[in-house]
Length: 427
Ligand code: SAH
Ligand code: SF4
Image 1 (cartoon, rainbow, N blue to C red):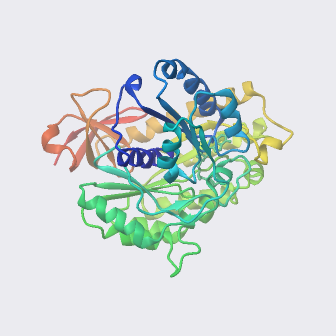
Image 2 (cartoon, protein in one colour):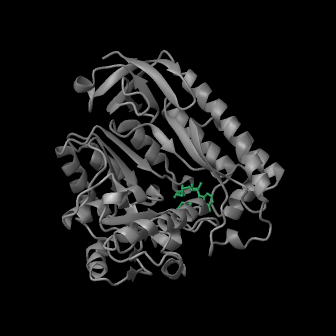
């Protein structure tokens, strides 16, 4: 979501007449888009923006900004004002569109700090400078109403609001015309899409509408929350040919006690039921997840439940996180915080277990045929092409860039590693 916000920020800057540079020393404006979901990136922001002081001394006209969810936290903008006196602009997640006015203030030599406490109406038609030519992010809903005990997102992104389906269809139709092949629909809980809209529409309805958009070949989405996950969605993914067979379904923890304390609204049994239903209806589907270790009160036994769940479910891959206390959330106030060394030891064990599973699952694909969208030269090896399967696995293969880039091809998987597959083009 932040990456897509950055694309909007880039679009606004272009509309103001700025062009992109890869050389930070020649920049007139530098804007840091931040995330506060965990503490580490937050620390980095203070470090990196602090380092810009020298640049600003050399070029006093340089405008430096910080935006995103970090300054959206209570007291944070004031902290930036004090600790980073060379920062000219601060804005939050609700007022990105105000950037041109804030820039004008900064150019006139005034510090422009503006945070909106509350979300307003959804603004359509903000300019977007997209990073890619084939794959595009499309926000379908903003905010979150879930207030999981560890999570800052509802505080900094505001309440759940869905874009109207006709606005989304219009944006995706335009993307299809521009040659985009794949869209990823963004929301914190896409299964809640459409709540409050008149006339009533749900996420499956939206997927079916988008399935008809010409030019677009693949539809992905993230994230679907297990609590609101529906049979209907499995059926839609099974039948709508453009919707990819990848389910990113954050489990977070394997112990029911911890899930309850997190306020996730499901038990492990319910989650296992979903996994069973998905695999029964769509045998080749991939299932990926998010996991947190070291949530307050997590005992060795609770953590063991997570390891067992991971072994039992066999996720294709997982994003694993060390629990990071966030000011203002319920979990940060819980008394039984887990010591740092225990958290680190647990995440290492979890990663080891999951990596072995990821490798095993990839090895099982050797010899199969897979549809891949050819994205271009491989990042690590420019002699190879790369793309992703419908199940979102990264594949490397030899081939003629000019002929294949942007096309859907069938490849045969010839080798497997933990994170990538090797293949050759069949068709
Ligand atoms: N809305 C999505 C998650 C968005 S945040 C969902 O509920 O599925 C992405 C991931 O960051 C979460 O799934 C969680 O695993 C992780 N995360 C969020 N807050 C965290 C915290 N305080 N510490 C560690 N990980 C966290
Ligand atoms: Fe955070 Fe929970 Fe909302 Fe996801 S559903 S963004 S984890 S509060």
